[in-house]
Image (cartoon, rainbow, N blue to C red; front, side, top):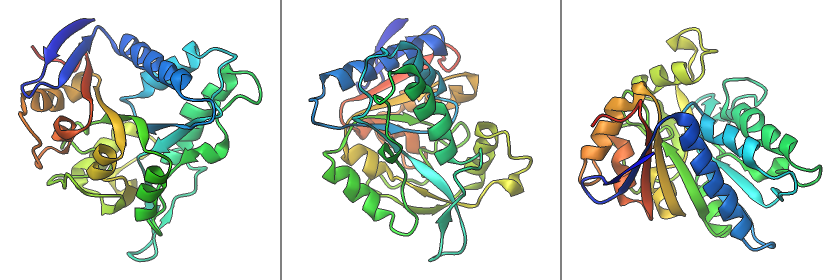
Length: 268
């Protein structure tokens, strides 16, 4: 691991030799934060689905103590695909393997619950997803719970999208139903290889906004892993401020922001 110091605007940057080391460092930070939280308080963790945080989720399951109490951990998912027509959207069946609900259950909750003593795992009701029938209620729910302690963010490879927010992005936008940009849908084919073609990728999703993340979190960490994220990493590191044309640059306006990369994503 090497410390770069900071991006052009002063945002701290750390480069790790590989995704495993990055994931382990971030997992230890999450577990330490949960341990510091009062026993009668919930710890809200903002989580994207997909490839960028997979090494972190796997490290959490490896490193968590069997005696740890995860019952206070709330997994705040970023987004979900929806089907239907404007005004009558519904989330996809959570049993489908390309949904964010499936990802949350099979790649976050179950592995973590399998690593701790029975009765100390994450309750099913502590996995939160935005509701397309009332997206704004998601922001209110997060705010009423005291906000997200740590929001893990990732950037789309092709257009810098964050959650389902495409360019040009609204820095203050809240949770809402979004028509997905074609580039976002193409990026998601790599995230969910179950999609056989672009036509199989849903055209709409319900998503947190950049304002949801930046306005309702104490700390936001942007994670960039692999050569596919190299162009996005270079653009984020070169930015002096938020650029609506590349939504992931919102990290420069977030509270207590940090950028974590592996060697594959970093270009000196």
